[in-house]
Amino acid sequence: MWRQLSGVARTGSSLSLCRMRGFSALVQDKALVDGAWVDSSNAKATFEVRNPANGAVIGKVPNMTVADAQKAIDAAKQAYESKEWRSLTAKDRSNLLKKWHKLIEQHSQEIAEIMTAESGKPINESKGEVAYGNAFVEWFAEEARRIYGEIVPSASPNREIIVMKQPIGVAALITPWNFPMAMITRKAGAALAAGCTVVVKPSEDTPLTALAVAKLAVDAGIPKGVINVVTTNKAAPIGDLFCKSPDVRGISFTGSTEVGKLLFRNSADGIKRICLELGGNAPFIVFDSADIEKAVDGAMASKFRNCGQTCVSANRFFVQDGVYDKFVGQLKKRVEALKIGDGQGCDVQIGPLINEMQFNKVSGFVEDARSKKANIILGGQPLPDKGSLFYAPTIVTDVPPSAQLYSEEVFGPVVSIIRFRDEDEAVKKANDTRRGLAGYFYSENLQQVFRVAKRLEVGMVGVNEGIISAAEAPFGGVKESGVGREGSKHGIDDYVDIKYICMGNLKYD
Ligand SMILES: NC(=O)c1ccc[n+]([C@@H]2O[C@H](COP(=O)([O-])OP(=O)(O)OC[C@H]3O[C@@H](n4cnc5c(N)ncnc54)[C@H](O)[C@@H]3O)[C@@H](O)[C@H]2O)c1
Ligand SMILES: O=CCCC(=O)O
Image (cartoon, rainbow, N blue to C red; front, side):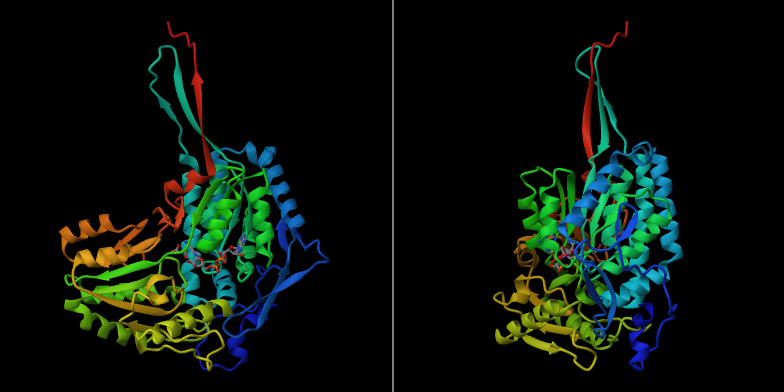
């Protein structure tokens, strides 16, 4: 199976290829339940995983059923209650996470190659994601030992108020394709650090990275049943099971706002802990006072990371009158120079979109803007010579409020630019959305920096910075972009219950 990952070499592309290992024992074709590598109980049904750059089938994984997912929940519950997991100290859990971290580091090239093959992400970005994703394992290995309680001074004599944090139990983790590893480790790292056990349901587009990383968790000695991975291309019934099962105490989901809302609604009956990292609609504001070179650098990084398929990608660019021409001119030159191709090419910066649905969404949004008289000053068309899922990096100016590009998340390599006159107008337009994940602005005016940072209705602000994600920082949104925070010390909160113990009638004298 692994040889098929080198699709570019076989098709004779002129792209220079990064070193490929030829075989990776990390590529799994079974799911992981209770420490065993298993097939689907439905006549060993499988589904194909394809390379979006060329459509080649690169693997098959089990198409697990609801009954299989139930087995995974049972295994996670049993593991949670087992002595092998429950009796571990925080330091023991920390050490296991450290071992997992070490193994991921040792296998980072292989994981990156698997990731590029199934997601189309340029190899350098995949390597970056492996490092980023592994930073969560390391961070939570450290945080595992700092899940502190409190002793609160009591207003009553002879009484102590003790507050402790305990793991919630089994957590179900549902993750997307755009960060096939980091979205898993950001959740699982925190869950395991807290003492929970997990059932992971990775995206149907990128199950191989998930299985590879899980294999390393097994190799690290994480006990059986603590991490289970259920692969399926029928997410809805399994999502429903997670919501309804009384044994699943928490759900952490990263993905679309629509599915997030569904999970929120469906898990209400069981009053589950829920962490939702949903879609964004990030404004990127360039003020007259901005350093334009820095702003263009930030725009490129924020917009074109993973071909624009990032929930924190800049989605709407608001550029002030005084710097409009300079910013647009410089940005256009940079976008024109982007190298497009199969992500396995060392110098490639823009790969394909993940699937046909995403491709149709991006091209549909651009056609909608065109029909509403927006100006497409660069790109604006598919690139069939590269492959059926490639779309040209595009710049659209004069985007009218009626265009989908203005109000919805494009999740693709399209820059939508809107001109503004003053700060108030920019902030109002930036906040005119029901989403509130990330927001960016460029300004060298200190007063403006604090004013605007406070006024933006988002969970994360990049000031003179286009890439803000970090294991140490709290990641998450406001409004319809989600609830809860991942990463940072707050990332543990969704996996612990606070228990208050009232110690009464203590005899101190
Ligand atoms: N906030 C974030 O961190 C973040 C990260 C990635 C993607 N996104 C958002 O997700 C969207 C695109 O990603 P996507 O297509 O992978 O999203 P998606 O919501 O369709 O899929 C995400 C995950 O949910 C699963 N899923 C789909 N339907 C389900 C259901 N009914 N029940 C349970 N699970 C279900 C999928 O199989 C996948 O594993 C974009 O809008 C983007 O903004 C957000
Ligand atoms: O797309 C969602 C996650 C992106 C990130 O963690 O930077």
